[in-house]
Length: 173
Picture (cartoon, rainbow, N blue to C red):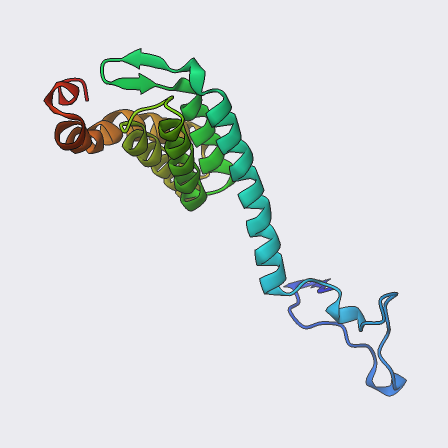
């Protein structure tokens, strides 16, 4: 694969001595410098791993949905905070928002959540993921998730509660 040099990372592959006449072959019959995965293969494999972790987090969120606490027109779901933090830290903001959306969608489709689940969980996951990406500090990711879900998610939930769910729900959003 690509090797480090005394000066740091050396992006040029080892191709051997030009006088040898043939390049070293690996057990797979390929030149030694072609062992490492290409950039796109590594990126695709990384996205498959991220998608698998996001799927597991969605499954945990849906299975734990009966643990929701009804408060007014919403059903507060404390497990979602933990899942958002795990997704924001392990997967990044984009995957965290996608995971929060799918979890909320499945909870609503199965009758275990309300429409207010969408803005709260998605904004919280986004804030958590962004704060962790830019600071690399877990306490700030926690604060970002809580503030994003409660304050910013609550503000984003008001139009949904007022126009989609009716005026009674807007009093609690």
